[in-house]
Length: 160
Image: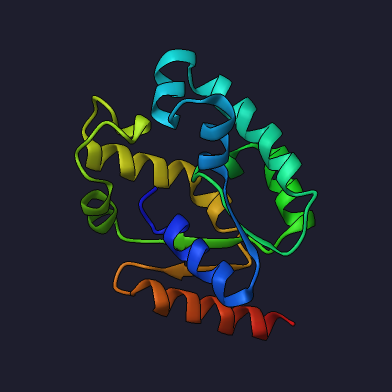
């Protein structure tokens, strides 16, 4: 959340001449609701099921950069699918940077009605083991989008 997945993904896809897929935006389009509305009206389990189904469909295509929500890899099936069909790139940032980037509105359902900094720390701790499984990890805290994209491309080149 707020590490720059969508902005970096869009820029990376342009550089690679790939299609860009933002999984959350695709779900919103299919459902006719924003993610925070789906969470509020139908709950997180419903959203996670949509996420799983949508990811499975998207992964059947090639030449694309996919930005998943930060919780997508918590599902073992999603993680296995991503490992099999994609290079998993993890973007990180410091808690203070994430807090500043996440804003104060209600568009972040997992941060609604709670101490935002504490919740970010808790989510990072819960997800740490899964995030560590990324083939490439880049801390975006002090980097521009272009710098992050360049680091990804450099790392992808060294993986071949």
